[in-house]
Image (cartoon, rainbow, N blue to C red):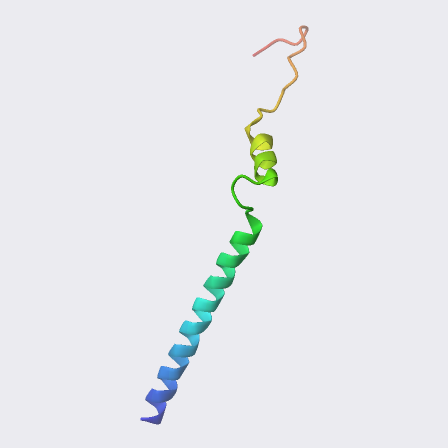
Length: 64
């Protein structure tokens, strides 16, 4: 009976640890991504929407 109680308590502790770590990951994700509408979000969004500008091919180089 004592072994079953120890296994039960071990399961409860592992479950609580799992919930704790998932909660910490969620908090970390919220801290990494700022709130919508903030200036940093707008700057980041604008930086990702601009297409990279490429140099045109040199006229003497043949396009294959």
